[in-house]
Length: 142
Image: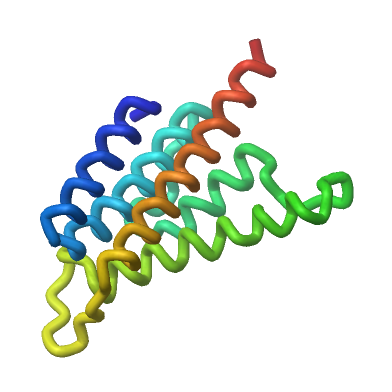
């Protein structure tokens, strides 16, 4: 996976947006997060517990990399970290309601270009952060 993969997925999602395929861009955004989470879990020598359940994968990442809110972490950083959980949840919901991974019929959520961009950009920001945490942890171990 790594940065090259994330960059490629991000570029593919951006291309989908340019071409007006917002539903596909949302699906790629979620896939990008899930792949990143599985990758950093495996880097710790663990097996992703529940593939497909992105909230559980993110929890596993937080546990493995000790990304918990503690009294030592600055309040502003804790605020950003809590926002990350919201990103994971929102990207997953947007993909479920507007992505092309499931048939939704009349229940399909319609998104505009700026919503698709927000989703994709949020996913890459989240993935970059998680990958950076994993890289930092690996350097500390060597």
